[in-house]
Length: 381
Image 1 (cartoon, helix red, strand yellow):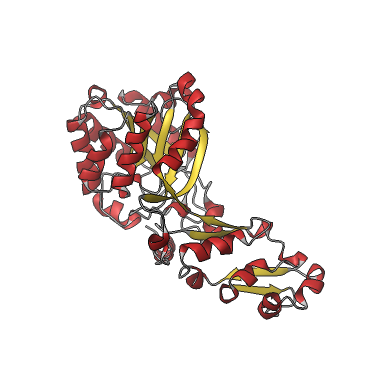
Image 2 (cartoon, helix red, strand yellow):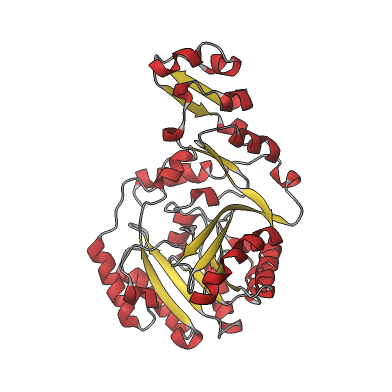
């Protein structure tokens, strides 16, 4: 890995591991932190799906297109283009003075004026005003405090990534899409983050969906105790499983962990649930796994587990940068920089997978760039 890329990845990994406030203490009992519920998805399981994204993931894949999924606690996202500080708004500074800094166009610090509602408002339209946050302060707020802070923003430039939700609360929302499930063969997909990091909650959510007649799927990076996967599998109709690399050392260098647990979990899942449909997906990442040899190794592994006879299909995913703006909104740099995947190489990989006999149906029908489960689901991880 190039030195500059390594430094970016390590810096981002550190930024995404910051501790958060006392959100667990104030969250409702038997809840999980949800950062999005996406309706009418076509690429995350059979038919039309409703995807529930849970926060928290053990891996730190630098290409993750949902960086807001990585930390378990709530966090503040800020889109500067939506900010109306230049129109005199100072509500965020009033909500949490110690966390907000306003810089006027002349370079002066307008924090005090903003906090006390003084001169900044009248002169703001004549000059640009930048807002910056002390995220260490925001990370120490409890759930109620950080929620109030985000809600104080009238333009929605500030949003809160993460809301505690209970099983029935989620299922009531998912059930509204039942007519689309019935017509398309779709259902609920739970993604993340890593849904297996929420073992009891995930099992109850999947079981509750089945009780309501809703079919289920999960998107997982596979890095969890096998007991969590086994518990979920009892209530699953479909699994989307990431296998990123067969090289454990490379896997550790890029994601923070080796791949032994992931490969072992998938092997055991195939043995215990041979009839469960399993779609394995691999994001093709420049410098990480972008070679025919890398993908052939994964295909050989899947054939060794029974291939289609074990209900395994496979799909390589084209690397994309759709989530780059989310990193900036979270106060983080995009770790992958301006790296691009060679389209001709991806087409070679795609053709090889098509010839392997394991290609997922989507690979025959659609050449668009797909997103993977690391919210990395999208979730892309």
